Length: 251
Picture 1 (cartoon, rainbow, N blue to C red):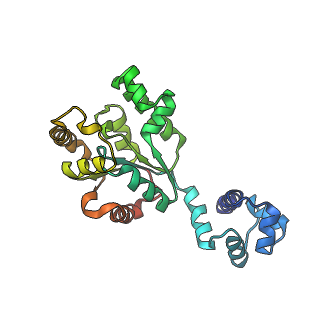
Picture 2: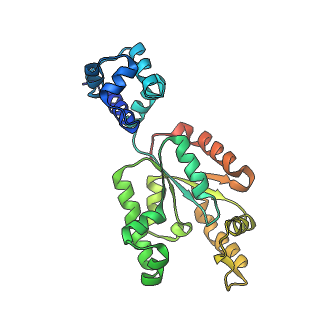
Picture 3: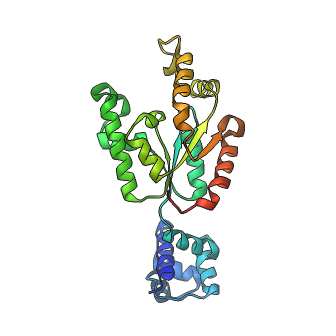
């Protein structure tokens, strides 16, 4: 069985199931026999270009995209890790970047919550930061072991985690979403989050010190994006341009 045909069959089957189509539904739409579609899905049919075009149209895509998806399946998984303090835009930019790359968007804090069975607030209140850092490493190790391609938004303090940070540097493509302390502050406040200044008159000065301390670590990221200068859409476009030649290859 040819590996490319096998991967193409898996892609076609996945798209068919995602669209809620039976084999017979897809065959009817593509003007092909059900037996032929079954053979293609199993990787046993050497489909012609014209039939592939017809099948792709029935799935709402193109033949070139089907082939590209089949080729991508052969590539090693790719994990892109976004770094930065709260207000960096990791969630907003990360979700848009993942959609453009056709991969999952994940947040490491949510994976930690799943590991703990607790919200982050309860986890910190009950067990403290040291326990959180251990779970952070465990969640990251589990994700890497699953070999999933994804865009991952990390917690702002992950660079302070002596076990997790080396894993990110060695096994992911790291991206620092950077901005000035004032830009970070304004974004968090604009989102309606009053925590940074609650009972802490020197909170803004603390943020400046935090950024200054972490900056040497953030600077070790492979890519740096000035989110204040580029904005959300511009940051995504810039990242797509930079990641283009590297897609499909982990570090």
